[in-house]
Length: 90
Image (tube, rainbow, N blue to C red; front, side, top):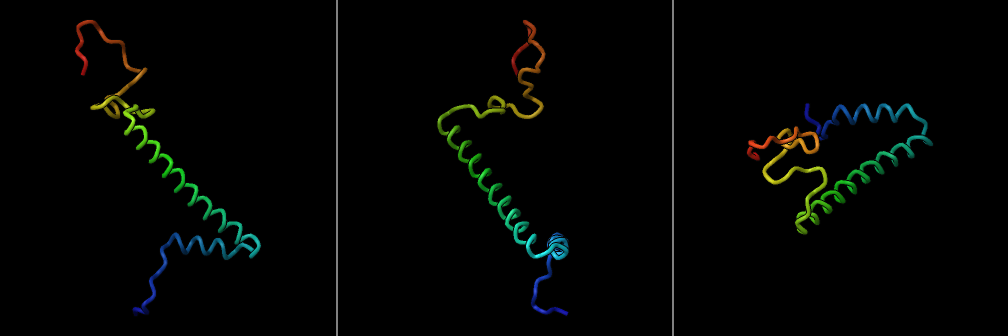
């Protein structure tokens, strides 16, 4: 029977069950730490996005990235074997 109330996800139910076992004086700091962790992750994500945008606008290479046209396993960086004289760059 539909009551008009959305059902909580399994994660929410587990989180509420764990909080239900804690005393009230512990529940509030735990909730505050969870909120703080979420906000901190958002701040880190925004800062990385801004740094990436600034680097791309300034034409600077981003740290830890390959040259244009190369990515992932194509870019070995300092671990690449030395080139032979007859080899062509890829």
